[in-house]
Length: 447
Image (cartoon, rainbow, N blue to C red):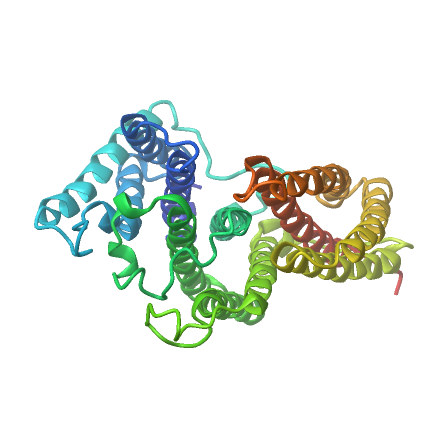
C-alpha cells in the first residue's frame, strides 16, 4: 500500500506533520516564556530542538517517505517558525531586522533539515511494516486510510486554534487586551519584528496572542487550499472556504477590538477600543473552532464510508444534539459578557444548569442507545465527563474572581480557573457539534 498511500495523501501527510510540529513548538514556547514562569532559555531551546527532531521521527514512522519525510517536516516547521524568528533577530530600539539575520535565517532552515533528518533516520529503523494512520475507529482502512491525513491536518488546525483560545483567555484574565495600543503594528513596529526582549507583562500576553493568531490564520489558509486541491466533494470545499473567511473576519475583529476602527495610529485620542467587539471576538473564536472540528469529521475515512443504521430514537437524538449546540453557544455568549463586562452572573449560572442537564441527558443517550456505533458512545461519555468537570471549574472560577476583587492586579488562580473554564467550554461546544454531526451521519429513523 506504501507508494499508493503516499501518492494519494498528496502532501497532506507532510503538511500535517510540519504544521503539527510547529504547533507543539509554539505551545512549549508560549508556556516557557510566560512572565510568571520563564523557563531558562537553554532549557527552552533544547525542548524546541527535541520537538523538531521528534517531528522528523514521527514523519518517518507514519509515512513511507523515510528520512526524506523527516527532512521535509523539519524544513516546513522551520519555515513556519520564521513568523516568530523576526522577534529574536530584531533591533531592540528600532524594531528592524539585524544584519545577522542573513546568517540566522538560512541557518534555521538548515538546522530544521538536519534535525528532521536525524529524527527521520531514527524513525526509519524498524518501521518497514508500519502503515500510515491505520487505526480504529476514525482512521480505519477500507481503502480510505490514505485520506485520513486530510482529517489529521484539520485536527492540527483545531489544536492551534485551541491554543489561541487559551492565549486569548489569558489575555482577558490578565486584563491585557489593550496592552498593545495599535494594530496591525505593535507600537509602530511590524508585528513580526517586534523584539522579544520588549514582550514583558501584559505586552507578552497580548502580542503572543497576535502571533499565535497569525499561525492559526496561515494554517487555515493552507488547509483550505489543500482541501480545494484534493477534495472531490464541493460542499466540503465550501466548508473549507467558510473556515478561511471566518479566520480572516476573526483577525479583523481582534484588531478592531483594540483600535475601534481602521487606523494604525498609537494615539489614544484616535483609537476607540470596543468591549462589544471583544465579546464578539471571543465567541466567534469558538464558532471558528467548531467549523474546523466539522471539517475534521467530514474528512475522516469513517464519514466517507459510513452507512447510517436505523434506530427508532434517531429523530430524538438529531433534535436533541441540535438544541444542545444552540444552548452551548448561548451559554458561551453569556460567559463572554460576564468575563468582559462583569454582568449577567445569575443568567450564566441559570443557563449553566439547563445546559448541564441537557448535555448529560444527550450524553447518556449517546452512550446507552448507540453502543454499536464506533464514535457516538465515546462522544457521549466524553460529554458527560466534560460537563461535570465544567461545573466544578465554574465554582472555582467564581472563587478565583473573588480573589481578584480584593487586589489591584488579577490573581493567578483567577486567571488559571477562568481560562480553563473558558477553554473547557470551547471543547464542550466542539464535542456537541461532533455529536450532532455523527448522529446524523451514523443513525437514522425508519423511512
